Amino acid sequence: MANAIRFYETGGPEVLRYEEVSVGEPGPGQVRLRHAAVGLNYADTYFRNGTYPIPMPNGLGVEAAGVVEALGEGVTNVAVGDRVTYTGFINTLGAYATQRLIPAAPLIKLPDSIAFETAAAMTMRGLTSAYLMRRIHAFKPGDSILLHAAAGGVGLIVAQWAKLLGLTVIGTVSSDAKAELARAHGCDFTIDYSREDVATRVRALTGGAGVDVVFDSVGKSTFIGSLDSLKRRGLMVCVGTASGPIDGFNPQLLAMKGSLYLTRPALADYIADPAEKEALAGELFDHVASGRIKIEINQKYELQDAAQAHRDLESRQTTGSSVFII
Figure 1 (cartoon, one colour):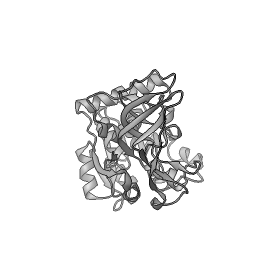
Figure 2 (cartoon, one colour):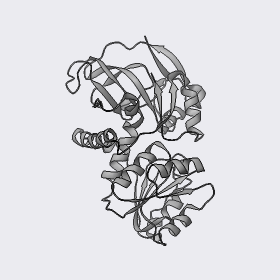
Figure 3 (tube, rainbow, N blue to C red):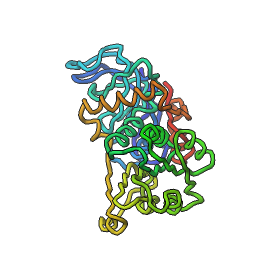
Figure 4 (tube, rainbow, N blue to C red):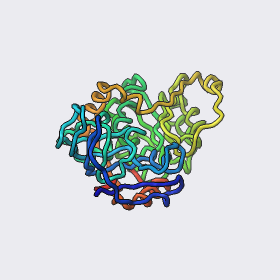
């Protein structure tokens, strides 16, 4: 028998249950996968608390790495014994498990040079960072970015990737320890948003001009400050809403603040095409395997401790990436 985290109603971390489950044999287009490590993402809390509605009861988690144990009819992209990783959304929900059935389509073959724990910690964050750096904007050396949550899992990868592209990186953090971590991973400057006004500090650091691009994963509490940090015709990239959704936005505000651009991308739309997904994953794996980008796994949990993991995540007690070790 396998074990999995299940929940029967939305709510706080206390609704998560560690249960024994029966997995069975894969159907057409599916594989049976034995997990070695499972990724923990802030989006998981949105499924749990009902921000992202799903049928009840249900499993949790959208990212993991492991070994293919059995193939269903018609599966040709992977073979039994392959090391794989995956990330997704509804189509991969249920990753908080020791073993599971999953569609074969989202699976990405994992090079021997990438450990399971590393893969589980970086597939979603790494592919997100890949499309942010390689698809959202035509960056050129000397461009500047403001990176919110710079000490988080995506933030640490984006900062490193940005330096490979020759960008100036300004990161926001909430403590001295997180500032030190962000600077160690490529941030040229850090701003403690609990003590400083972000936009004012960005203007000071850029000679009054502002940055070319803002990557904002916080949302409601940082939205206006992010717009105020951009140079004329700069790009605002909303990549998350950790502080809550942005409500009542008037597009006229973009004109008033300098003919700004605004986008709200989703990873799913950048990995929907198998060839593009393979290209982004290949570039990511190459950077990680070579050591040019380091993946920081700063929290490790047992699967049965999922509730505590969510508490730590929501209270901003974590840095870098978090994984469940199976």
